[in-house]
Image (tube, rainbow, N blue to C red; front, top):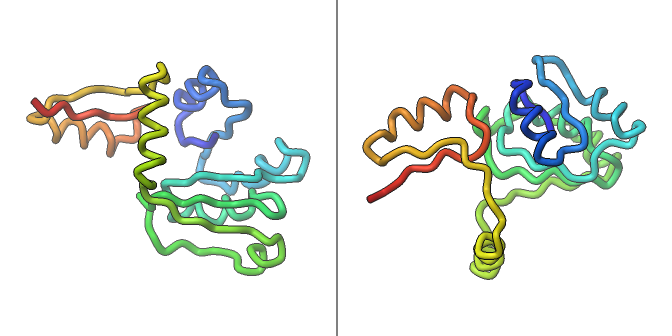
Length: 147
């Protein structure tokens, strides 16, 4: 897990993450490589994009996959095509999923899986919810309650 916030990393460790890297604006791909005995990670799921794309590409193991499901930091990142073809990397885009996948996820919830909820706001308080999200201080989902 990577984050710019130590508190989020601490929470991720409590939830079972094996390793965490504090993103202080430097290229943390070497830290990832050292944590994996120079192998790199096999799968990375990224919703940020932008400037994080390149260190993610550098953090992937040979044959690794980047799943991108968002681009909150920008949708036109710098990449490394040589590394992509040389290491036989895959880049996969993902939005939502099929109805069967949605049914499988909702079954997990019925079976007792608990999502991490940061906070719940009434719909009328949506501006405060958005401000919380934009502050990057949340850990987990921000929920709007529609009555």
